[in-house]
Image (cartoon, rainbow, N blue to C red; front, side, top):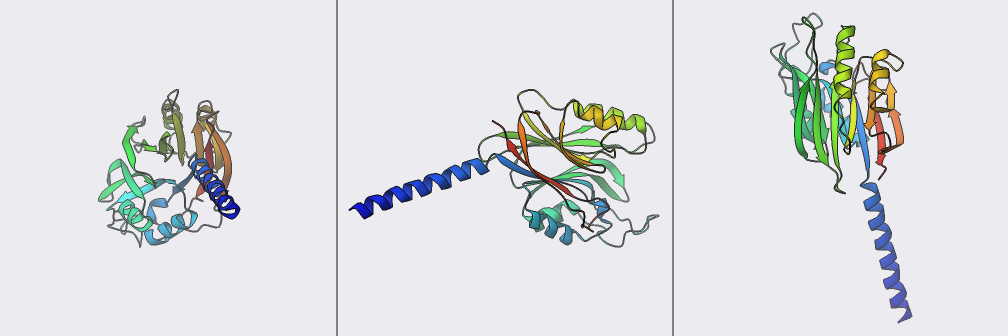
Length: 253
Protein backbone atom coordinates (compact mmCIF):
# COMPACT_ATOMS: atom_id res chain seq x y z
CA UNK A 1 0.00 0.00 0.00
CA UNK A 2 2.81 2.43 0.85
CA UNK A 3 4.41 1.71 -2.50
CA UNK A 4 1.15 2.57 -4.30
CA UNK A 5 0.73 5.81 -2.40
CA UNK A 6 4.32 6.84 -3.08
CA UNK A 7 3.85 5.97 -6.72
CA UNK A 8 0.73 8.12 -6.99
CA UNK A 9 2.47 11.03 -5.30
CA UNK A 10 5.43 10.64 -7.60
CA UNK A 11 3.18 10.62 -10.65
CA UNK A 12 1.35 13.69 -9.37
CA UNK A 13 4.61 15.55 -8.77
CA UNK A 14 5.97 14.50 -12.15
CA UNK A 15 2.82 15.65 -13.94
CA UNK A 16 2.84 18.92 -12.04
CA UNK A 17 6.45 19.60 -13.02
CA UNK A 18 5.74 18.74 -16.65
CA UNK A 19 2.64 20.93 -16.70
CA UNK A 20 4.46 23.85 -15.09
CA UNK A 21 7.30 23.50 -17.58
CA UNK A 22 4.84 23.49 -20.47
CA UNK A 23 3.06 26.61 -19.27
CA UNK A 24 6.38 28.35 -18.61
CA UNK A 25 7.64 27.52 -22.11
CA UNK A 26 4.52 29.04 -23.64
CA UNK A 27 5.60 32.50 -22.47
CA UNK A 28 8.74 32.34 -24.63
CA UNK A 29 8.97 33.27 -28.29
CA UNK A 30 11.88 32.74 -30.65
CA UNK A 31 11.94 35.20 -33.55
CA UNK A 32 14.31 35.29 -36.53
CA UNK A 33 14.93 38.14 -38.96
CA UNK A 34 16.31 37.14 -42.35
CA UNK A 35 16.80 39.20 -45.51
CA UNK A 36 17.03 36.50 -48.19
CA UNK A 37 18.52 38.82 -50.86
CA UNK A 38 15.74 38.22 -53.37
CA UNK A 39 16.76 34.57 -53.67
CA UNK A 40 20.07 35.31 -55.38
CA UNK A 41 22.29 33.17 -53.18
CA UNK A 42 20.55 29.87 -52.40
CA UNK A 43 17.60 27.70 -53.45
CA UNK A 44 14.48 28.04 -51.31
CA UNK A 45 14.98 24.43 -50.18
CA UNK A 46 18.31 25.36 -48.57
CA UNK A 47 16.83 28.42 -46.85
CA UNK A 48 13.91 26.33 -45.59
CA UNK A 49 16.27 23.66 -44.24
CA UNK A 50 18.21 26.32 -42.35
CA UNK A 51 15.03 27.76 -40.84
CA UNK A 52 13.79 24.33 -39.77
CA UNK A 53 17.14 23.53 -38.15
CA UNK A 54 16.96 26.67 -35.98
CA UNK A 55 13.31 26.06 -35.06
CA UNK A 56 12.12 29.68 -34.60
CA UNK A 57 8.49 30.39 -33.76
CA UNK A 58 8.41 33.41 -36.08
CA UNK A 59 10.50 34.34 -39.12
CA UNK A 60 10.43 37.89 -40.46
CA UNK A 61 11.65 37.76 -44.06
CA UNK A 62 12.70 40.62 -46.30
CA UNK A 63 13.33 40.76 -50.07
CA UNK A 64 10.84 38.02 -50.83
CA UNK A 65 9.56 37.73 -54.40
CA UNK A 66 6.52 36.37 -56.17
CA UNK A 67 7.01 34.98 -59.68
CA UNK A 68 9.80 37.36 -60.64
CA UNK A 69 12.33 36.57 -63.34
CA UNK A 70 15.70 38.22 -62.82
CA UNK A 71 17.55 36.10 -65.36
CA UNK A 72 17.82 39.12 -67.65
CA UNK A 73 18.52 41.70 -64.93
CA UNK A 74 21.70 43.79 -64.81
CA UNK A 75 22.74 41.31 -62.15
CA UNK A 76 21.25 38.07 -63.51
CA UNK A 77 19.77 35.58 -61.06
CA UNK A 78 20.32 31.99 -62.11
CA UNK A 79 18.04 30.36 -59.49
CA UNK A 80 14.60 30.93 -57.96
CA UNK A 81 13.08 32.52 -61.07
CA UNK A 82 9.33 32.29 -61.74
CA UNK A 83 8.45 30.86 -58.32
CA UNK A 84 6.35 31.86 -55.32
CA UNK A 85 9.17 32.06 -52.77
CA UNK A 86 6.94 32.29 -49.70
CA UNK A 87 4.75 29.36 -50.71
CA UNK A 88 7.82 27.20 -51.20
CA UNK A 89 9.27 28.20 -47.83
CA UNK A 90 5.95 27.65 -46.04
CA UNK A 91 5.46 24.24 -47.64
CA UNK A 92 9.00 23.09 -46.89
CA UNK A 93 9.02 24.33 -43.27
CA UNK A 94 5.42 23.51 -42.38
CA UNK A 95 4.86 27.07 -41.12
CA UNK A 96 1.96 29.42 -41.78
CA UNK A 97 2.96 32.10 -44.27
CA UNK A 98 1.84 35.58 -45.31
CA UNK A 99 3.26 37.71 -48.13
CA UNK A 100 3.05 41.50 -48.01
CA UNK A 101 3.56 43.25 -51.35
CA UNK A 102 5.60 46.46 -51.43
CA UNK A 103 6.32 46.58 -55.18
CA UNK A 104 3.42 45.54 -57.39
CA UNK A 105 5.67 45.41 -60.45
CA UNK A 106 9.10 43.85 -60.13
CA UNK A 107 10.78 41.86 -62.92
CA UNK A 108 7.42 40.50 -64.06
CA UNK A 109 6.23 39.68 -60.54
CA UNK A 110 5.99 41.22 -57.08
CA UNK A 111 8.43 42.10 -54.28
CA UNK A 112 7.91 42.49 -50.55
CA UNK A 113 8.17 41.12 -47.02
CA UNK A 114 6.84 37.88 -45.60
CA UNK A 115 6.19 36.34 -42.21
CA UNK A 116 6.41 32.65 -41.35
CA UNK A 117 4.76 31.52 -38.13
CA UNK A 118 4.22 28.32 -36.19
CA UNK A 119 0.97 29.88 -35.00
CA UNK A 120 -2.08 30.78 -37.05
CA UNK A 121 -2.56 34.40 -38.04
CA UNK A 122 -5.47 36.12 -36.27
CA UNK A 123 -5.19 39.20 -38.49
CA UNK A 124 -2.71 40.58 -41.00
CA UNK A 125 -2.28 44.05 -42.42
CA UNK A 126 0.34 46.32 -43.94
CA UNK A 127 1.17 49.97 -43.48
CA UNK A 128 2.62 51.63 -46.56
CA UNK A 129 5.50 53.80 -45.39
CA UNK A 130 6.29 57.34 -46.60
CA UNK A 131 8.04 57.27 -49.94
CA UNK A 132 9.66 60.16 -51.82
CA UNK A 133 9.06 60.41 -55.56
CA UNK A 134 11.39 58.18 -57.54
CA UNK A 135 12.23 55.86 -54.65
CA UNK A 136 11.06 52.32 -53.94
CA UNK A 137 7.95 51.80 -51.85
CA UNK A 138 8.40 50.15 -48.44
CA UNK A 139 5.89 48.80 -45.92
CA UNK A 140 5.50 47.57 -42.36
CA UNK A 141 4.06 44.06 -42.50
CA UNK A 142 2.01 43.20 -39.40
CA UNK A 143 0.68 39.84 -38.22
CA UNK A 144 -1.31 39.27 -35.04
CA UNK A 145 -0.90 35.85 -33.43
CA UNK A 146 -2.12 34.22 -30.22
CA UNK A 147 0.37 32.19 -28.21
CA UNK A 148 -0.68 28.90 -26.58
CA UNK A 149 -1.07 30.67 -23.22
CA UNK A 150 -3.58 33.09 -24.77
CA UNK A 151 -1.25 36.09 -25.10
CA UNK A 152 -1.89 38.16 -28.21
CA UNK A 153 1.27 39.43 -29.91
CA UNK A 154 1.70 41.63 -32.98
CA UNK A 155 4.70 40.92 -35.21
CA UNK A 156 6.03 43.83 -37.27
CA UNK A 157 8.36 43.06 -40.18
CA UNK A 158 9.90 45.85 -42.23
CA UNK A 159 12.61 46.68 -44.77
CA UNK A 160 13.43 50.37 -44.98
CA UNK A 161 14.81 52.47 -47.81
CA UNK A 162 18.57 52.93 -47.92
CA UNK A 163 18.78 55.27 -50.91
CA UNK A 164 17.19 58.37 -49.41
CA UNK A 165 18.01 59.80 -45.97
CA UNK A 166 14.71 61.67 -45.70
CA UNK A 167 12.81 58.50 -46.58
CA UNK A 168 14.65 56.55 -43.91
CA UNK A 169 13.79 58.93 -41.07
CA UNK A 170 10.18 59.36 -42.21
CA UNK A 171 9.76 55.58 -42.41
CA UNK A 172 11.36 55.05 -39.00
CA UNK A 173 8.98 57.57 -37.45
CA UNK A 174 6.02 55.73 -38.98
CA UNK A 175 7.24 52.39 -37.58
CA UNK A 176 7.67 54.08 -34.18
CA UNK A 177 3.98 55.03 -34.23
CA UNK A 178 2.76 51.43 -34.53
CA UNK A 179 2.84 50.19 -30.89
CA UNK A 180 -0.18 50.88 -28.69
CA UNK A 181 -0.26 50.93 -24.90
CA UNK A 182 -1.38 47.69 -23.30
CA UNK A 183 -0.39 45.47 -26.22
CA UNK A 184 2.60 43.23 -26.96
CA UNK A 185 4.78 43.76 -30.02
CA UNK A 186 7.90 42.36 -31.65
CA UNK A 187 9.75 44.16 -34.44
CA UNK A 188 12.19 42.58 -36.87
CA UNK A 189 13.71 43.67 -40.13
CA UNK A 190 16.36 45.24 -42.30
CA UNK A 191 16.40 48.90 -41.36
CA UNK A 192 19.34 49.72 -43.65
CA UNK A 193 20.72 51.70 -40.72
CA UNK A 194 23.21 50.74 -38.02
CA UNK A 195 23.06 51.30 -34.28
CA UNK A 196 24.17 54.84 -33.49
CA UNK A 197 22.56 56.50 -36.52
CA UNK A 198 19.90 59.16 -36.05
CA UNK A 199 17.25 56.85 -37.50
CA UNK A 200 17.97 53.96 -35.14
CA UNK A 201 18.15 56.38 -32.21
CA UNK A 202 14.68 57.57 -33.21
CA UNK A 203 13.44 53.99 -33.45
CA UNK A 204 14.89 53.20 -30.02
CA UNK A 205 12.90 56.00 -28.45
CA UNK A 206 9.86 53.72 -28.72
CA UNK A 207 11.12 50.21 -29.48
CA UNK A 208 13.69 48.49 -27.25
CA UNK A 209 16.32 46.79 -29.38
CA UNK A 210 16.99 43.23 -28.27
CA UNK A 211 19.74 42.56 -30.80
CA UNK A 212 21.34 44.17 -33.84
CA UNK A 213 23.77 42.98 -36.50
CA UNK A 214 24.66 45.53 -39.14
CA UNK A 215 21.43 46.75 -40.72
CA UNK A 216 19.31 43.98 -39.18
CA UNK A 217 17.50 44.50 -35.89
CA UNK A 218 15.03 42.79 -33.56
CA UNK A 219 13.15 44.84 -30.99
CA UNK A 220 10.17 44.72 -28.67
CA UNK A 221 7.48 46.80 -27.00
CA UNK A 222 6.82 47.62 -24.21
CA UNK A 223 10.30 47.84 -22.73
CA UNK A 224 9.13 46.24 -19.48
CA UNK A 225 7.12 43.57 -21.26
CA UNK A 226 9.86 41.25 -22.48
CA UNK A 227 13.05 39.69 -21.17
CA UNK A 228 15.79 38.75 -23.63
CA UNK A 229 16.90 35.16 -22.94
CA UNK A 230 19.23 34.47 -25.87
CA UNK A 231 20.57 36.18 -29.00
CA UNK A 232 22.25 34.65 -32.06
CA UNK A 233 23.83 35.80 -35.28
CA UNK A 234 24.55 33.19 -37.93
CA UNK A 235 27.76 34.74 -39.24
CA UNK A 236 28.81 31.58 -41.10
CA UNK A 237 25.63 31.63 -43.16
CA UNK A 238 26.09 31.73 -46.95
CA UNK A 239 22.41 31.72 -47.93
CA UNK A 240 22.24 35.51 -48.37
CA UNK A 241 24.25 38.71 -48.27
CA UNK A 242 22.76 39.26 -44.79
CA UNK A 243 23.42 37.18 -41.68
CA UNK A 244 20.19 35.90 -40.13
CA UNK A 245 19.68 36.93 -36.50
CA UNK A 246 17.51 35.32 -33.85
CA UNK A 247 16.34 36.28 -30.37
CA UNK A 248 14.53 34.26 -27.71
CA UNK A 249 12.31 36.45 -25.54
CA UNK A 250 10.15 35.75 -22.54
CA UNK A 251 7.02 37.64 -21.63
CA UNK A 252 7.45 39.50 -18.36
CA UNK A 253 3.92 39.23 -17.00
